[in-house]
Image (cartoon, rainbow, N blue to C red; front, side, top):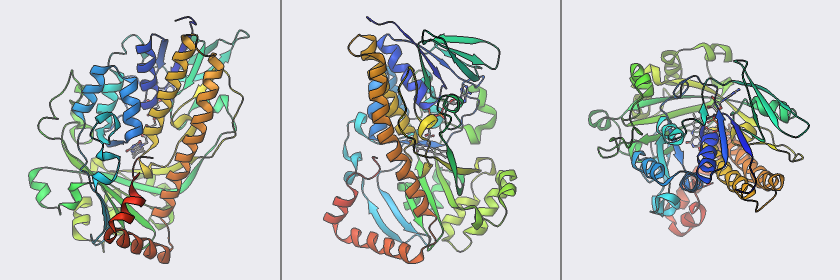
Length: 440
Ligand SMILES: Cc1cc2nc3c(=O)[nH]c(=O)nc-3n(C[C@H](O)[C@H](O)[C@H](O)COP(=O)(O)OP(=O)(O)OC[C@H]3O[C@@H](n4cnc5c(N)ncnc54)[C@H](O)[C@@H]3O)c2cc1C
């Protein structure tokens, strides 16, 4: 290393940990400051879909043995993506071979990973660099450019580069770019997990556990349904990765990391729900599950079963918010990645993938600066220029999909369904339209 500098990362989530792994491997001095007191404090066992962007980033940033542990401990989500009506009529099936899933190289493929497992992979080997119980409050910049971080426990840390990776309510972002905003889309999603065993599998039509599905009712709402299956080989842990965390064993349903399930998420505008917003926020899993049950009372019985037979403790409500695009700012030695700068609706499943892509690009540029190949601020500027472009493209795409999901335009929706039916009978057209499906 010809340029020595210390990097402080605030937030030990998906993007921050991935960046730390890459910098640590490259010999760049890095420390991660995470608010949670223990590694597992806020983690729940929902699946995360990793697309080829995310896979490439993980492959590049992780040491080889951790990359292999990631691949070995992923579940499967089936290959074929289905568009279905609320009566389970198949509108279109997009086969694995049509998407980038056709690429059998794991570093360019799609994966379904438990959020807990992903976190286990990303934090492995960071002892001595990853500090827990460090809730960032504010920073101060000295005249020489060094940045001092202040934490809630009255301690401080000093670094030459500060990276905000503290998620959607980023305090670093609030101080550094106070004009950035995140808005409420008005959409409320209620999600749950249906445990998948040989017995419960028989109670559902194969389509609901063969691959991910988008359920498209006539108007105003939608449901995403995706299996996360562990086979016997995959449930074996690799260096402690992929198993259940001891600290979470008491809440096996919500935090279980080794069993198969089908996750579902119903979404609609808050005005569609029979209770007002404040009521919805106060509801426990049982009442939320009942609310969805009422809203889908005329849907296919198997979809109703999926919801009704999901344990109440796995059911939760999520208000959907999204970042507003920002104008580029003057680059300094403070930068941001992931949800801290471009938080998006979860409707395309690309927030974590975009955070991983940020980590990959920023790590490359910081490493090049540490080697004296490029100027540090120029490297950060190059990262920010590209990140703002693809990051806010992802924000816009995710918002568009969210709006389409809850659209009340019945005619538009009927036309969309008709188009899906046309694609399903004209394979060359389907190939053309869906060749990049799920990758961006
Ligand atoms: C229901 C749901 C499903 C999703 N599914 C997918 C999917 O399938 N694929 C996908 O790509 N994306 C998905 N996403 C989006 C994805 O989870 C996020 O985009 C991703 O986690 C962002 O990573 P990040 O590192 O920016 O932030 P996070 O992973 O949120 O990490 C932020 C970290 O900062 C810490 N922190 C916060 N404040 C402070 C502070 N003051 N001091 C110190 N530490 C702090 C937090 O504790 C946390 O550990 C989904 C999101 C939701 C809600």
